[in-house]
Length: 446
Ligand code: UD1
Image 1 (cartoon, helix red, strand yellow):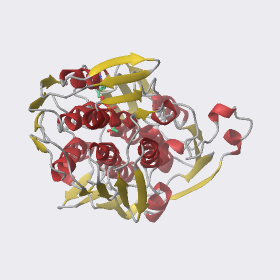
Image 2: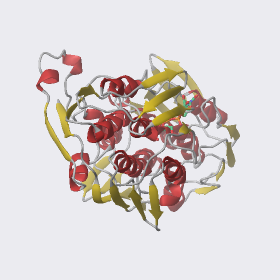
Image 3: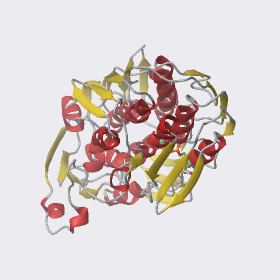
Image 4: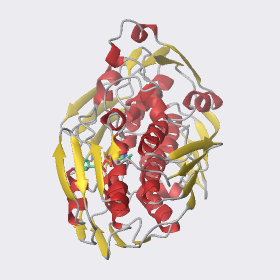
């Protein structure tokens, strides 16, 4: 297992280019099995999660090939409708094959993703939506077993206690493409990644309107055809670099982004005192002036993404004054807090919030990453800290950030990867690396 060694105290400067969005690429890959033909997806990030989804599609019978940032998926020979626990447990987004399998084959058995390290993550809304379309669903031995002779359009409400559901909306919208008649999804997730999936489906012949709003309408069609699609930029990756620049009081330009999809992040950074200039596809960040503490809350889109909450916490630990960070989407997503405390941050949890008494000195040390965005937060804190940090269990980072060290070092950081002897030896077999580099037998999320 590898760790990242970060020399703190740097100031990020320069230019960085953002990859395609993981959370758009994964459901689009899953939706490719709705059709029998050729799908080309461009600007697919080179991530472990993408490898996991490729393996899952291959296990169903699809042919997946990667070349220069694109994925080619031939879905003609998809014959299996079984998504095995061994693959689903690695990544929650695997559940996105459920809707496409039911719609194309009228049957599916998909493992439940199981427990998770950012709190309780049910899929009841996915199941409610698919049942409304006429799927007969039952849970047996940890699998969702679905059957449907003919899906029919329905009026579906997908709101839940944490807002709408992103992958649930993907599942229901995708299945509804081949349902008979019209489906209306109310309280649909309006995240840009859901809209990107919708555009992919429309380009393949689906009839979806209302994308990017909370009411999505789908008129079923007979079938979809081969398609080429380019994935939108990763707004979470872009936000992570913006926050890292602010935490190091740096000055960077982030290229190949859609600033209009990041308004809440940009506004939060401005409230903190970061100067931001936006053009069509670039964000210029300058954090040379004084920064202020703030109160902020992670909310469904267009609010601040929960996937940037941990990174904001790391930044606010460097800013003098009391800040409050609340997560209304995943109220338990605070495993990074105790590791930040080990680096010297003064952080106190209060329900779905943390109170940060920021501005004290952060010091480098050895910390353990607990999930993807928590890992990013630890890297940010390490960049801003005095001295050296070792960030362990960075396989989480490889799920969601492509070439992170190279990109940070291109901005003047000193980050390198080396084998982590402490976690490589004497590990029980279930904690060791598997064939595609997933290093632990836990369910990976986000
Ligand atoms: C997706 C993203 C993840 C992000 C999250 C919230 C992907 C692959 N992952 O995850 O990065 O952190 O959205 O923006 O796109 N809920 C229910 N019942 C359900 C489903 C969800 O109550 O059936 C709740 C969840 O507990 C949570 C909220 O709804 O409180 C949002 O979860 P959801 O949008 O479903 O997250 P994911 O789609 O799994």
